[in-house]
Length: 128
Length: 98
Image 1 (tube, rainbow over the protein chains, first blue to last red):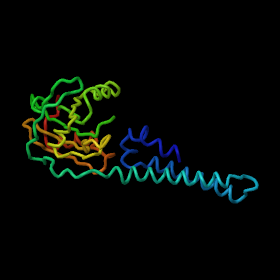
Image 2 (cartoon, helix red, strand yellow):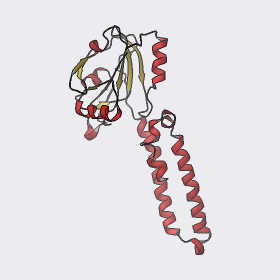
Image 3 (tube, rainbow over the protein chains, first blue to last red):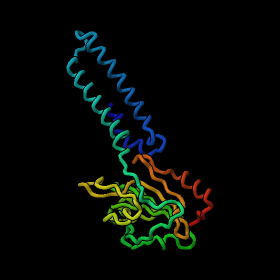
Image 4 (cartoon, rainbow over the protein chains, first blue to last red):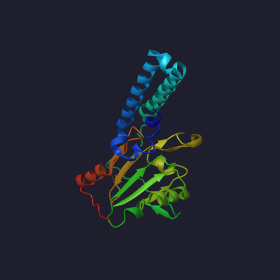
């Protein structure tokens, strides 16, 4: 369960196939849940042989919380994006701007589209 | 074509990102989110300490400065993939050379 929860950002986000729908992580959660159920069945089915009734319950609760957090982050929080109703639409002029690049050198949109170039502007959240 | 990535990150932060990841296209710093606001893609209070940042968005601008294509995702995990943008450039018959 822990692997399923923490592997999304460092590993599976790198690949669009496993990022857009986190199926790899959901499969890992499924595997984790299956192992957890098997363990609980042992702990409660034959307590004299295996023990772990209390730790089993505690770990199950933690695992469920982790799964809940993962689902919330991916399916609720990630979709809290404000609408961009004020954004220029296709056919409208792109507002010109001048901003500093990574070396501190000012770059303008006019400059970017010089010599008949198409420009792709990518707005991103930052903090990488 | 030219690519420019815009965020509230400082030039120093972008420089580090480019060095770490080997990106060679322009990373533009908009610390006060002025251009981000002008493009209507502000995400109010979504950054560290309630700072205003950009919501993910992609715009294709032609050589005359006209917006030709806009991609506004409603999920921060899902962005335009390179092949989608290239297909759009082909479809719009925009020059894609450097």
